[in-house]
Length: 77
View: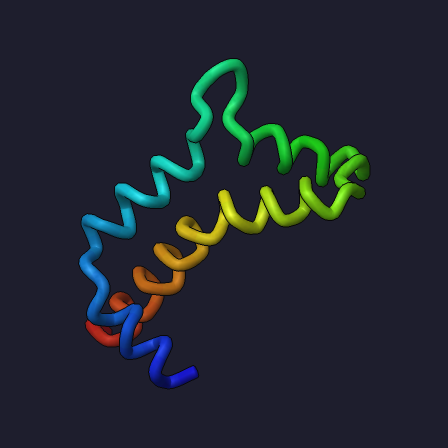
């Protein structure tokens, strides 16, 4: 876990932001996958393993970005 956190600390912030925006929005039409899968999750209709995997893959960069920003904020205080 420590090795992963060290890697995340060294990862360029711009790259994580770009990846998070791209994966959150892809595909852009007719509806982004992340929006669709979150809607299905809140409706209780996210049951297919492929849909769950898709949600995890599209949300992962945003989660990594959030962890990196939280760690940066913690070290600056």
